[in-house]
Each structure stands twice: as C-alpha cells, then as structure tokens.
Amino acid sequence: DLDSDYVFVNLFACPYGEAMTYAAVEKLVGRLRDRTGVEFTLHMLRHYVDGWVMWPAGVFPLVGVLREPVPAT
Image (cartoon, rainbow, N blue to C red; front, side, top):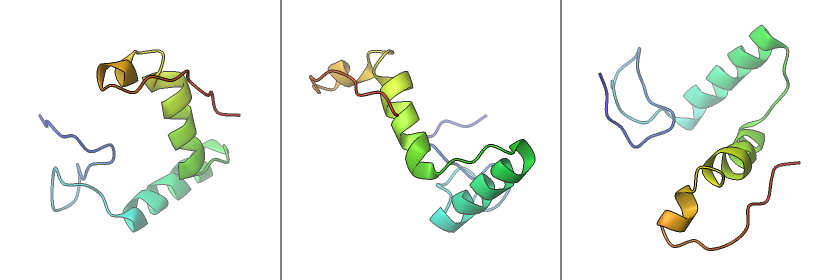
C-alpha cells in the first residue's frame, strides 16, 4: 500500500516508495522494449500521457491551465 506523487516509484528496491533514478527508469524502459518489441522513448510516453490521458480526464483545467490538448503524433 503506497501513496506517492511520483510516476516511477521504487516498489521492489530501496529506497521503497521513493522516486526511481533516471538510470533505473531507462533500464525499466529497455526491459519493456525488449519484452514487448515496442520501440518507445520516455519522451514519447510523456506526450502520450499529456495528450491522451491528462487532458481528456480534465486534470489541467483543475490546476488553472487553460489550453486545448495537443495529442502526441
């Protein structure tokens, strides 16, 4: 059971519940690419979350950001 504001959180290594290092996230992405055969980068993931998850969920207007979503291409 974990309550965290981080996107990438250490669940199986110390320090538990803390943000993963950039190097650890890069390794995770590499393992995911190898297992799935899907080529993607962290930058692509950022655009996906911004354009297709956060905007449709109405998150940004709640924090005062008023603009139309720009979906990832």
